[in-house]
Image 1 (cartoon, helix red, strand yellow):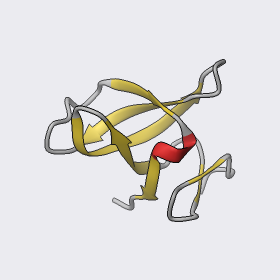
Image 2 (cartoon, one colour):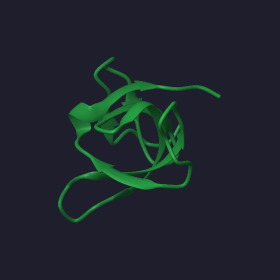
Image 3 (cartoon, rainbow, N blue to C red):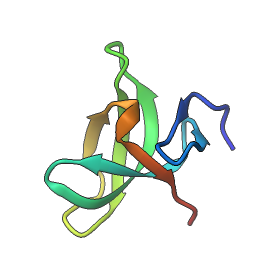
Length: 72
């Protein structure tokens, strides 16, 4: 696993490259890969899958929007 940088709501350490379920408005069941830390402190993720997700779209979230680490 990548070096821990953030903690999900499920108390799991995550970092760059990890897949996480994220809470994002307009994107139900969103799963994204952590790709960057923005200067604002927000976390940039590229969306991978979900019922209303456009794969490849980038979103920025706060640490408390990281729900759980996803495997596979």
